[in-house]
Every structure is written in structure tokens, then in C-alpha cells.
Length: 428
Image (cartoon, rainbow, N blue to C red; front, side):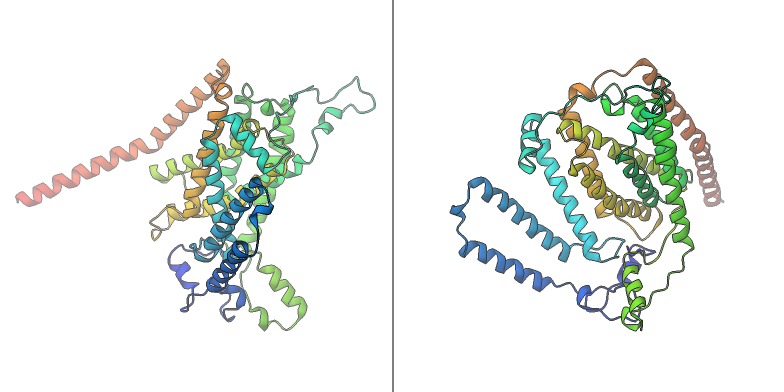
């Protein structure tokens, strides 16, 4: 990932006069891999379309096969257009084409979500079976809570069996996920707050989805301390390393040894520079509301995976679940950086393109979950959950007023005082 310190000016500085991209070094000319290749891509697409039109007989295949291949061809043409013509984002390493490709994939994903949004739950699940024949089958009931005894005295051979039964492939994936989230947000306290909030959300939504019905030690020992805490700790160590690292890059061709060339090549997959985030949530009401909105969207993104699995009958072990998590991680890297630039960079006047489409994706996923699981999401929560969130809401409102209402009154008083001074000056 190449990361620039600015948004507008620095992005212009990485372009050469001939319209090509710099590769992150001052002494290395624009090579074959850093040119746009717009004409080459266009020619290749035209030749491929001509071949499919004149030299291949579509009547030999079924209508379903031709329809699937036609949709795939539309996607390929759109991706080819996007990776050659879309605007660059804040990251340019390992190559700008990667981040343009991710942007285009996010647009395609959003279009698929909108298509599903206009279907019934039954039809949407049937469409998922066209994507993978293994899908479209109702998920079996599963007891996620089970026995909550951490130490089972009755089992002399393995008294810790309840704990070890929870240790599976999702544990390292969970830890890795929070490591990525820490790198995305680049803030310990914000990530720690999101970690606590998600555990509270799991407690609050147990009456809707059985996935959230876990034992107390599964919530607070396995998830919060080991997975969440371990991932956040690793993320902070990684951030410290990236902040202290000296970033000096040499041209690949100026390095004499093969080992040096290899390390320089591998370095292309690391940041070009690093920018430390300081969200300063309490600095102004605008930043406070922006950070609160970020927390809400982040939490919705986390919850959507559980609700979408239930709504579309996708097994937890299916590759689309892990694929979405990886895809969302790439989207989050760019989106959070664009959000930060929008709040801090005075030269950034527009909400970033990746942030814009990512917000749309999160809201669309939530709408699909609400539409297909209306009976589930409208189940009344227990009374203690209502009391808990009422206290959280009241506390949040009171804390916001305590932070910003006195400043608001001081600003109004200062403005009135200035107006009176100006009136007196005009009179005299």
C-alpha cells in the first residue's frame, strides 16, 4: 500500500506529465507496469468480443449457460473500464490498479445487493443457488450456547472439553480480524470501544439470532480478551513499528545484488509512508458526530454478516462468508482513510468515492436483512436490554451536552458581544 500524506496536492505530485503513474521512487522511470495501457486493454476487449460474436456458436449451449456467461462478460467489461479509467484513491501500493479493481468490485457488489433487495426472500435464496448450487438450502438448527460450564468435574478425562470445543478455525480468523481493524482505524481506544460495543450487541440481540447466544466465558474470555484483545495488541505493535520505521526507497534497478532486488520487490507490498491517525473526537461537535457515525457504520458492518447468513441461508463455513470479510477489509482500509482525510484535510472537499459506495453497501445489506427477517428483527427485546440501551442513550446525550453546550453558549455570547461592539463603533 502506498500512502500519501495529502489527498489532492500529493496525489497530483505522483503523476508524471505524460499521464503515467509514479512507482514511489524518485529515480525510477515509468516502466511497463506503471503505464495505463488503455489502448491495449480496449483492443483486447474488442478482439475478444469479435471472437465470441463471429466465431462461437451460442446455440450449442443452454440459455442458462449463455445468460451466466453474458453476465460474466458484462462484469469483465466494467472491470476493464474501471481499472483503466477510474480515479486513484489514497493508496497506490502495491499498484493503483489493485485499488481501482477493488472500487469496481464494490460497485458490482452493491448492484447485486440492490437486485436482491427487490426480490422476495424465497426468490433471493433461489438466486443464490444459481451462484452456488450448495446454497438455497435451509440451515439446520444449531445450539450455540450449549453447556456453559468452563470446568466440567463430571468429565474426568477432559474437564475442559467445553472450552476446547469452542477452539476452531474461527478463533484465529477472529484474532486476525481485530488485528486488521486496528490497522484500519489506527486508534487503540476507538478499536477497544468497538470491541466492547460488539459484545454488548451480541448480548442485546440473543433473542433474534442464535449465533449470539454464547456462554459468558465465550463472550468475555475467548472473544473479548483472547481474540479481540490479542488482535488489538498485535495491531498496536504493528502500528508502532510502521510509525517508527524510516521510509526511504531506492529504484529496483539501482540495487546491485539479487537479494537486495528481492527485498525491494517485497517492499512494494508495504506502505510507502505512514500517517498516524488522531481522531480528536471531542475537538468539535462535527468531529464528535462523525466519530459516532463511524462507530454506528462499523457496528452495522459487523452485524450484517450474521443477519445476511441467516436471511440468505449461507452456512458459516461457506467461502462467501470469509470472502466477504476479506473484501470488506480492503474496502475499510481505503474508506476509513478517505473519511479521515475528509475530516482533517482542508483541501479535501468531497466525500471519498470508496467511502461513499461502502456506506451504501452497509445500508443496503442492513435493508436486505430487515426486509427478509422482518419477523425476527421486530421481536421485542427483554426488559433489561431496553433499560440498558435507554441508559446508554441518555448517557450519550448528556455527555454530548456536557461537552459542547457550554462552548455553544460561549460562542453565541462572544458573537453578540462582537455585534454590540460593531454597532457602537458605527454610531460613534
